[in-house]
Image 1 (cartoon, rainbow, N blue to C red):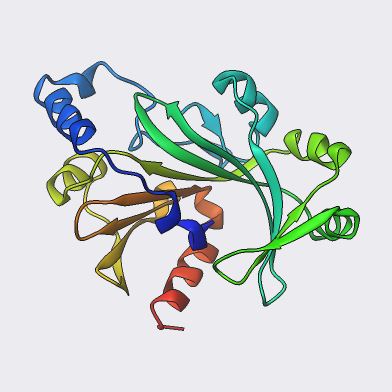
Image 2: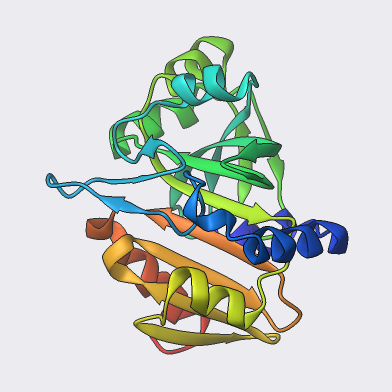
Length: 222
């Protein structure tokens, strides 16, 4: 999901001004399901936007959003596979954003889905996008959501990020005037461009080490 970060962002300045106005009214005291409201549960799972990672299925999210996503299996040049459901532009929580979720699937299941795929297309990142059979798409929708990529239309200025999310545990510069703000205890990696464009990646806290490792490889640290 990290590879699609910049492709997912569509920005509206009017919406950004609306967000600032909402904060000025003190709306944060009344609202729920906001991007910075991540609950870490006693069993180690986390919940954001009313989605419990590792438990809530894509089908349950479909019913909530009243939208059927585009489901596909992605295979990187290195052979790494991920199963994703792309919802496009939706209202999740109070704000509008483009949303993509990764689905929890074992290596064996991913391999079987790949073997039964009915077509494939190259992507700009070099990965292949595999089209699943209708039956396998239905099975995929019954899988739990493992991660969320949330690309808001509003711009995230530094002061807004600090006020809403707090100070990050670390910041990693990945080039092109983009910096990841890391919140490992909440399983959140927030990619922020210098102009305020942002993409938020949510996983369970236990899965965050792998996300950080990929970010560090992007930054050339590994």
